[in-house]
Image (cartoon, rainbow, N blue to C red):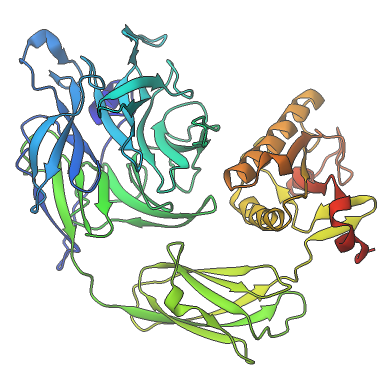
Length: 536
């Protein structure tokens, strides 16, 4: 989704302001290959090449200009990165990918054999418009043949002639494609979405990242480092003005924290398209700030070594039900979802552990003990030097199953849904992680996710809604590695209410909430007969 294209389709608005920082964290420069026109949308192509968008370097013919900014249509270029961040040997990426209309903002697979790219709605020589006469944006996919040429361009299944889809970026594990769209279900003007990329090349259902990321304004230009650091630009948050760059840390479909990048990355103009190499701490972003060479300029930056700031955490491990100390528990420390092996420790008789921490970082402390389920505590450090955090880590007894009447269920808390919604909430995601752990331990167990609605709304609609909730739960579990052979989903509508809140009965929101639930029923309890017998 190209910035200037999106102006025409009402996808972009930009703002940001300036503040003074005595010792900037980043040093940057405007690269020499910028010109008076718009250059933006950088993406790494391996470690030594950079891909970006720029107006076509063809004859400046008045009838070959885009009316949005009176510049030639955008094409995708690639250059070799020099030691100083400058680009050398710049050339068009591909005659197959580039057309006479807009192309920009791409993502590559790790093996560099697949490219996702944003293009005007032009495919198979057909230029399509919506009912308002607007040519929207789409993400297309191409693969490299044996000669290194891009071919087999395909139209992604969630594209649509009536809304725009663009700005692709892939997670490190290649299982999730993030993108920007104004499709139905968008919270603001443009939102960031994600979709599961299956091993067979098919895609799941696009999911909005929700209000912790998206606002009533524009969120766009996502870029993922690893699997859990999401950089993006927004004009809907309190920043310096116009478009500012932010970084959110993600975990299990939850947003742990969101940081506003400081100056000089953000300015009082549009700042977007931020990418970084976490090993070299170098990267690029785009800005139309004052003092540039043209419309949008690409800036190279290097992150300076931060001032040393340290904190620590002390904790104790206890049984969640009895409050007893749990000596012998193995404690692992994770930073940004990466385990720090050198800091693993097994607690002694006092069940106490202690770790050094870095300031302004995201940690997770995980405890493991035989006959207990894994327990964890999330911890975000601040910028206060020598601060000590105190935590209590609780582990639940490893009772994976519970018998209620004739039913055998997974022993996790019931998950709930918002009114008239089927998306997985953050609190539900935490419970589903427990279910995932149990099903991985017992690969022969089959679970039916029985989804239920409250009584509001027509019966037939509630049945369909409950089916969507069941399918949403199954898709989440599948995306987390549980095979479909262990998963079934069934919607029960409003047939099995847990309280008196039937049709026409006045109830509180909390009472209705208890009926919007999913239960986890074991459909083949005979495979865990020995475990069940102990509970009867």
